[in-house]
Length: 633
Image (cartoon, rainbow, N blue to C red):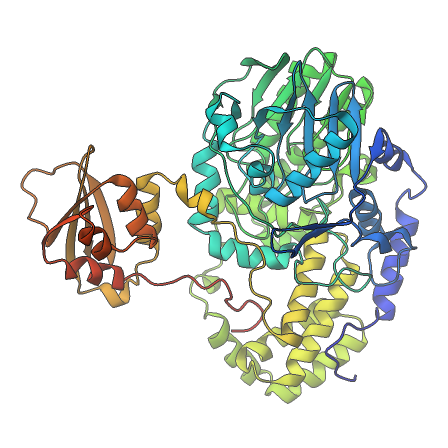
């Protein structure tokens, strides 16, 4: 098998498996294509969306190749889904409700009011959001944005806010609506674990992969993520209960809170005057993630199914169209009911059957190999695992209830990857023997085993070029056969990095807007996460910030832990240094955008005690690494 740094063709076994998919499912069913095309108004004349420096952040033409017949290097079911999702333009959902689709990972919905338009979920980037709004206005007139609504706390539903609304508009009274808890979850997810999530998102969405039949063809939920400026305008109106009704610019909305479903803070909303229901991301045309591959809090499918049941009870009798913040709408009351109940049954089935099997003693890997969806759900295209999957979702259910440990004591204290890999390879007769046997497995089409076993050689000796090449080839074939878009992207990005090196983290989520809306507690918590514990074991430092017009904040570093307290603690020891300044200056100092010495020289900060102690404290903070290794040690 010749080594190559370029993508290879599909092996015969993968080509045959992909061909079999065409026979297994009803590809002659055109309902989704009719729905995805319904209401098309027009699309942008310029295919490239660029930032102020002229760099491309989104390309409308990147997926034109999907109009061709599906090649051997792609699962036909995923190819079909990507053809549907790649459609772009302005679409009429029902009278007065429009969507811009295909301008980012998510959809932007626009609801026309008496004077202007309510924008729902303004995409990821300001640039793509502005382009979507411009397309709407080109066809519907220069209507002002009279309201902004975030359905939930993921960045593809709020990051482009500054592309549709300015701060002056908000200050002038334009409401920004979100579910209760939105701000806390939006910033904590993107800051506390943001570096690791961002790096893994590069794999999940295949941002560094070339688009094409041997590369990135979509992520199932949407094609990929835009790479422009992500920001955040804080909400001015919270939705705190189901049944809450608000009217914005003559648009009457009834809200359905669904916390703990697809996001920790999420809502559905009903437009009673238009018989339309927005399902946010709680019902989309795929099986969603219970634990996204980039990492997040585990989602509870029991709760998810409960809220879908509740949505049916609340709204199904008064809905003629259901739409979401991804994919295309479903029209007709009976079709909407079927769609929502099948989505509900899918999540309930995954939850209940995982619990049934774990209570019989099966482990996560065993459950993932056992569970299949019922035939009715299997035949429904919208339950397919293009984004989530049965395999990784049932493992998430197991994790939710029982955690990482499968109960086998042999797995309780296993060696970490490199140490285990060195021992495995030695036991198996050395790298040459492992690679010889692995090449035989590759020739037999057992790519899953090749990836599992050659991973040990790569981790035992990351400089082994033969091992890296064989591992890349195996991951690539697994990607070609994946129905799940994010699995394909993970496999193909792993192959790319093994061949050509790290692609890093293309999208930055901890933007200045995100950092600016952190509470002071959250900001200090984010500093505590960065403390280099072992290097700080013997440090004992106390710094107090006497904040003008507020209670003092004290930071103490001891035993490798940075603890902050607010207010005065009776009997507490005097701090090593006491710094008086405003809260805004304190935030700038903690974020590294202002220098304490400069502030003192300008008379904006007063320092008492040993000023060097604060500098010493900062010296115990480490930096995150957005380029950490994934497929190598």
